[in-house]
Image (cartoon, rainbow, N blue to C red; front, side, top):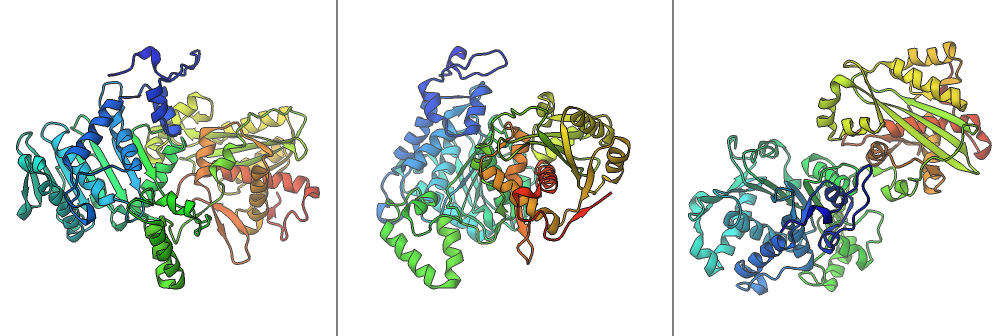
Length: 553
């Protein structure tokens, strides 16, 4: 039953925070759920419970020591199904349209895939079409065969469903439904009308062709569902990593997408790999389907055989061997979310990062000192005519953020740099500006005008390792020391979460977009502002730049 509107969790400009019902609160796991509650999504626990009851009543194990016995959901599997099917939109349909589940090997993944596929064939929309997608025919057959064995192991399901192995189909005559196996190396799948599509081991897909085919394959359905269940891939690239990264950003509220459920069980490369607590992070079934003693033996063996070590970390801990090094943990960044509080008399530094004229540009205003801490205000600029395309390209609500004053929309399809110039001059009129540091890319004219016509202390900052290493390290020190107050801008938070660190042979560092090529302009502008701080006040540091990277105007 849908909760009454008066009991839902609301937050508006003039609305008071309403206490969430217990059912809602118990299902709220992360920032994405909080966003969903604010937007009117709710929890119908009975819907989720019916799914769990179906699995435990009609689905049976097909192999192993529990073969033939009804499935007994583990705590993490039950939680996942309750969330996936219990959350509802205001019209009563399922909240989630996509879900990404990453879990290490030997945690009951195949059983869960099979049960999900059968459930969606039996108890979903009229005329369901469920597709089991894998990288090749062999893998697709493994997934399909597991589902077929589950049907044959259950008298109730066998009475209702027909397994047609020669066609790779399971048919439900009662609701005109079918479950079909698919593979990426088969002919085109254009024209499918999927009620549900399940991707097994997405990390093995070298091409995104099949993934893209199913992007809108359920557009005509009332509540289509696309499911990914996978382990980690060999490197931080491809569709699987795109989906992992997207899932973690949605979970953390960096990307507001209440229609996506991301559940990632993985260890961190910096974790102590000998600690059982680390093992549990990637293996929620540890102690049930996997014994800790067996896991420890496998770990010790893998450590002695270099050729197996990377595979063990990937398959058993979901640690990617070749990945991008994140600049900051979001917890550290969020710990600095207090509102700026200093006055205009404090020393100020401005960093400017101008991207292509048709994309996002940023101005960072850093104000303060090491005794009182630093305020950071970052403003962004986008061309008005491009905003719809850029929202789709970047997956971010730019129009909403513009309404909140975080972005200035300039007329036309290219950024009018006069808006940026006017804002910098306005900041300077109310602040004690010591330095203005600009990335010279696309900014020569603006820099000259700010210096020669507006009288500001402008310098260009080359975007190389020698120029950026010191301010990048100093920004990290300021954040980790909680000396920063950035106000919690969601757009700047997104850029902070995207930024990765690259090193040169000498150990110098700078920020980079990484393989994902996500936007980091706000952080780039902030590093430029910190470079101004170091250049204007080197007393806090042994050396501003071992070899100067500043190009003076």
